[in-house]
Image 1 (cartoon, rainbow, N blue to C red):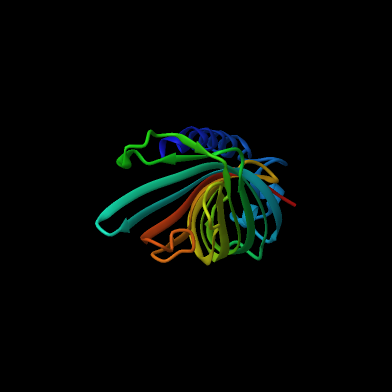
Image 2: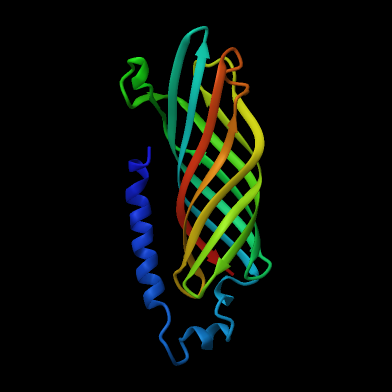
Length: 218
């Protein structure tokens, strides 16, 4: 799961590092202090922003029926749209919507099924988060805490997994210029023993997403 996310993250981190390093000269009209004032965190201060990115969504479930134990991992590539408002240097409110593009992939090698079996279906998530953060002129570290609804629909299953729950995550954002920021983060969308999709089994289901993308601040 993680290795499929390494290349997008590495590219984003590299872009963010060079952008942050080259964005502002030390002095002059294009310096950070001249453009934004004396507050070193003002690049992330109050204002609205929008963005989009790539998300790697993963569902891991361990199911037990009688004495048989099953372990399945569904994954999908998704696009994420987001919008938010920063109240100050330390707190923002952010909404996100993610949906998979293309088939879902099943890893059930522990059950003798080959890796990478494709299924017709989709995953999507919509959520609203409080976003506490600590920022410098070049970098912001933030948390995400909110409430969202996750859904997965796979052809051949009698039920659609649809669960609403508290969601949380961690991430960082690189200042790429006057308006552009580059972000990477991780969000736990769902974790519960009881769920609607595998209700006939004793199961433990977790849903995670790894994200990388761009935001534009107005």
